[in-house]
Image (cartoon, rainbow over all chains, first blue to last red; front, side):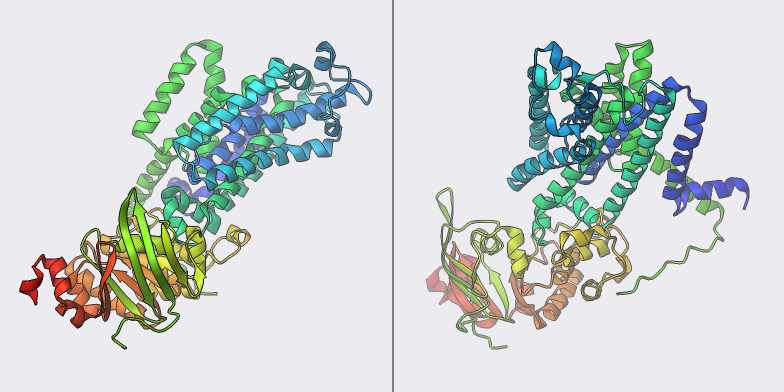
Length: 373
Length: 256
């Protein structure tokens, strides 16, 4: 076998998933940190935060058929949990966060008090999104609300959340959100070394969550989720309650958005309503559609690529971004509903067929017979 | 076979005085039905007689206006669909719905798995459980086990549905027009399958196809305009003038 065909075999064979995962890990852990300047590496860390939230959307929407337009809410719950802790940490034991002083708040609101503890804050990063998603999911999915109605409901939640955040100036920092952090777990967030550390943490979390999601998708639970996506009413007659399965999945996807939001805060240095509303939530969904919603890798890829394109285009041609995003979305929905991942998969299959045609003598891989346990 | 309609006191399925009303239309108008353990019962009747509605009521898809439906002594109305399945009642639909993206094996495995706690579903499937293997063998789709269900023909889909039903391990199986749209060979194969299943299950079959009925039915309940018209063994039902009238539109006098 020549090196070329061996390379092709790696990309088309049964181990394609492992090869791609290892390549992505190599790219993100070794090549990117060496090749990118600190500013660009920081941007990449930011894109990867969105990719974590996109992974959650891939799970809920791509696998579970729940088109959620409100992931910004969960991103925000995670982000604000982290931000509140950092603000309190900066303010010291007696002081108040700066924006409260400017708003004339004289005593720390009770809601803030427990966020002095980093453990409580970190727990809330996951607990709050999961709690909100579970309550919403149980109410909505039990009543068999789905499809566009669920999408609109989740969007309304995002809109309401942002209105509330903006309205509570003294409690939440209003439109400005929470910013100006000076000490992130003992590190100065402006410091290049700290930024590198944040970057590696984001990559590690993304990798871990990706493997977790992949395990979920491949398990019986994942098969059940796909069955519910394609025939919810039929699944009831298999003796399962789809509402439970959907709620669990929605909660997992919310947890991922919450973790993404929490990581975003030290990486970018701000969490504000502008990041959480209807438009950013939809943009994230569009990114997943373009990357390929039926594949977890596609969702992650979409999250990174679309945010990268957003930043790059905004630097050179700000007004073009919206058009490009809209145009791409229409193209993908019409021509390639499986997105970039679907196209890549087709290309891989084509390559595999050609290889098979070129070497007909190769014996077929032995099929392992699985025996009853 | 005992021949006569299940009249054993306390049959597996007991329906009394059932009424189902859709917007003032009485789809089912006072049906009594009793199906005993181990019975194979055919439910026939012209279009709109209420056959599928009856199945829908038993499985929780439609709520009755009044009357009782009891399965092994447990009242069914008011329970959700998946809860009724958990009591041991499985059904198929006129238009078969299998999960096209899942393989034949995964479809069966899903059907067999509802008794597992949700947490245990988080593990990947390793191997094939005995119930799944048995169902796969019964429906004869072993060669297609690893293929996505989307590639199956209409007949194969119906068989897969029946297999999924078997994998559920139900006490009562409800089949809604299992041979609709099937070729002659497929009907034959389905008939054999049905005979085999009926050996150790209680089965209710809704069917339109008279030929199929003649070949495979023993006890038949004829529904007409939401009521039970006749109940008895195939020959008696076929000879009954009232049945001939509703099916062939003959006048009573001519038929007698």
